[in-house]
Length: 161
Ligand code: RP5
Image 1 (cartoon, rainbow, N blue to C red):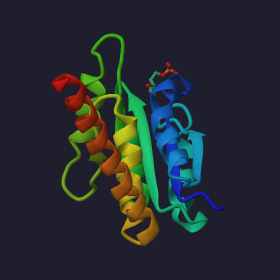
Image 2: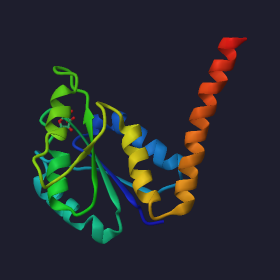
Image 3: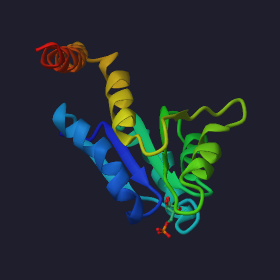
Image 4: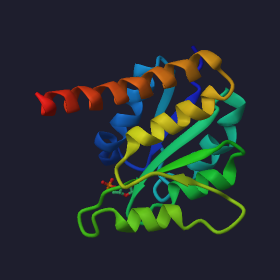
């Protein structure tokens, strides 16, 4: 299966955070391409990767980075595909630096940004974007939502006992 969702990150130190995006895509049986692409350390690779992603059949890119987190914005400027940014938590500023770096894109080049460290939501959003073109995937998302609802109701029942 050709990968439909690309999950990239600035460093292997981002992988523990980004693992949640990989896991949710696996849960929905959607193939992913996972790569370390640094805006600062491998700028040429970033250009090549972002410019060729749509030609390889990728539909959505999830990009995680921490600190002066340029990767999602730079990649968004190089591809026509939707880009979802994941601000990775940092030691000194706890990821507020990453969040501001990613979310404050000037008009013209959007990056959809999830909460600090919330790669799971980035994965789900990517799946929902794919789902607009895949009715069976949309149905799985509905089932997933139902399972969230059921788990809350089960907790309520235990509280009421
Ligand atoms: C960013 O710098 C990466 O996305 C990572 O979050 C941060 C630190 O990278 P390492 O020094 O751990 O490789 O580019």
